[in-house]
Length: 497
Image (cartoon, rainbow, N blue to C red):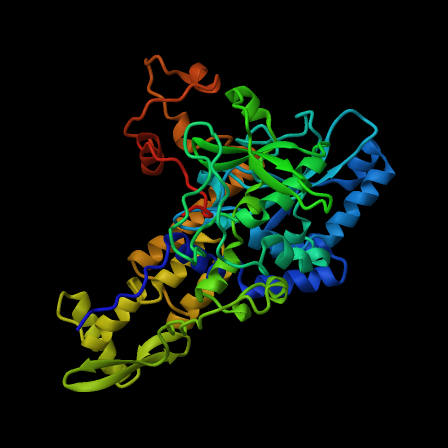
């Protein structure tokens, strides 16, 4: 009898499945929506863990009342939980793309400066809590914090052309902009020339290619919006396909119906001109992750953001397997030939089938080096390395400290004292990273702490470190930075396969 193997799920879809489970919890969405519905945009940002670095009075004094009026209107339209839902992420953990400045809206001012409402993510070493910051970028660079690694808005990651990804009033455009009504099989056009690699993605030679992450069917319409925003009715644009690969395409309208199409650029441009061409934003170049998850049957509409679920209603396909239930209460343990229960009593995890006096004697025996009861061993294991540790770790990685503590309290009780082990190490590490993020926000630590580790008497002294030279690796360099410096791999976006 022939064996039939289920097709393997792509790694990037498994990552997005975890992101949708833990990155934006329902409690955040409910709180942010409630604050936004009453006009408290700052409270909504606080609920979504977004720090507001805006002084509207200073902006009014500097740029006038008209600009502040438009800025305040956009802030009231902003759904910070929806913005966090659609933020770019990196593999394999699905955390926010670090060190990014992303444009949300652009404003025309009487001055020569370019004003943009931007959201920033901290560098990787200070990303504890997965917090973001909201501010106004004036283009001059005088208002930019010097400790941010990339203070200028990124051309590749921009949402000013995709307001439906953060403005709930326009979230209904999501299905049309992401191509939810189109067939999932998207055949790429003929190949064009590119810089440093293939131009267009190689799609599988099968009828259904929904595994492809490229939204080729919507490139023409999105490129028209891009070029119009750049003041160009038609022309060439690029699509970033990889670290060293860009497709150079040309937008054309071959008929009178003004149906935009694109084709490979006929002439070969030098690399300098290719780099200066408009770049199709990542949100338009790739298939929406939620649409991929729905088509693959890895998530149901009920588990998506309410605004996203309403826009993508009917886009799902296969049913989703029920999630694995977390360990409940009580636990059952085989102890001395009998099945005993372990449950929460008075806020702590207790072996309820043993007499309290017997438990005290057994605990004293263990303190003296004797063997422990199976019930006590099970309680100790739950305190040190519980089955729910992966869920706690995922919540901590995505900044949901309250959700992680709720899981711990539901498992061990609010009166539990943590013991040495993986669970305590995860909680202590998360607390230490939050301190590092606070120092970064205050401007007290501008670079990775390991960057200041220099050896006395060496050529790499403090002056060279302040001048921007990279210090040598030594025993005082943190392990995370050592692995990053010694690895040739670059961070991959979560949208890539």
